[in-house]
Length: 61
Image (cartoon, rainbow, N blue to C red; front, side, top):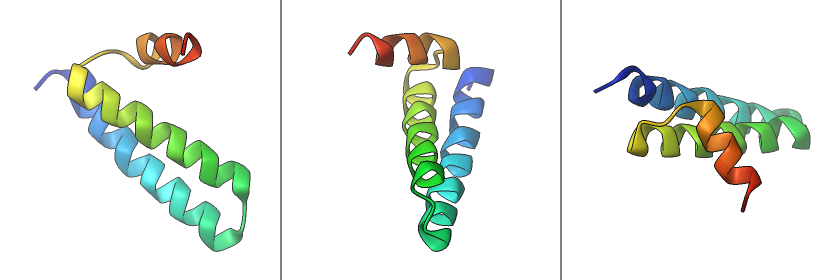
């Protein structure tokens, strides 16, 4: 497991927390940011890419 994979797992946990916190506080921007972080974390864990590489790929969708 490389560092990008570990970082991806951490981003998933952090994203899940932000998502739930946004739901509890009724803050849609925090909730959306959490979902984005979670998605980036899942991709990063699966493919071992850096956050910047993933962000560039998402922009090109």
